[in-house]
Length: 272
Ligand SMILES: C[S@@+](CC[C@H](N)C(=O)[O-])C[C@H]1O[C@@H](n2cnc3c(N)ncnc32)[C@H](O)[C@@H]1O
Image (cartoon, rainbow, N blue to C red):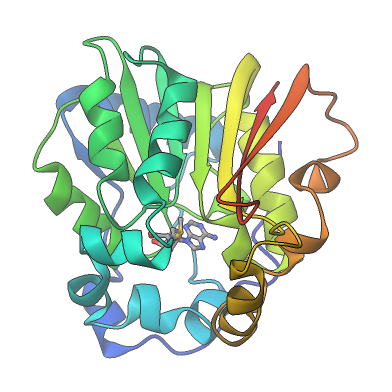
């Protein structure tokens, strides 16, 4: 299990908006969540751990996730759907379908998502199911808590995907929705390794993200300048398979890839 700090973590000064929320502790909705979180902290290092904002988030994605107006601007269902060329619902539902119509057991969502992804996941939770969500940006966790409006059996945790504080094999399923393309390769490799570490043997890790479009897909030519200017790490997902970044020590039971919208998007399900 890795518990070392992310080597690329930022040392840039925080903006004043972040200072306002920098003291945020991992928050929980529901009494049982507190118990689970305390147990988690004891298992890893026995102390509170507050992650730094990664450099790529501050330098490349500040406008999308950290700026004081980012949540106000982007937290609109129609806008997140537009950004995905109308494919948000299909991609969301493809990820949820992997968990089933009713979701039991323990689910980890790695990083918040604008739009109703998490709300739809929560609607499927059975009375014995529970969801933990991590994000490295406190403002995103605050936004998620507002969206979930006190729904039970949900833990909201201030953590870095590259250095999860949960025990090995502690989740039945882990979902990573459009995070990998935002990360530099070193962070992406660690995120994938951590997701595989915390999922139980036989459990699924579900990735949904960008992918290289088919040669005849006109969006291929539209997306190249968009991604190169706004999302500089995203082209990695055009050039390599997610399976290429798996740790050598992991031998999954299966790796299933499905593409969408002429290949521009992919869902990869790794069964541990
Ligand atoms: C999962 S992606 C989702 C992007 C997607 N386009 C959407 O609709 O929101 C964005 C989230 O990832 C979070 N994030 C980025 N790097 C992270 C990291 N290393 N650990 C945890 N969360 C991270 C950001 O703070 C942001 O809330």
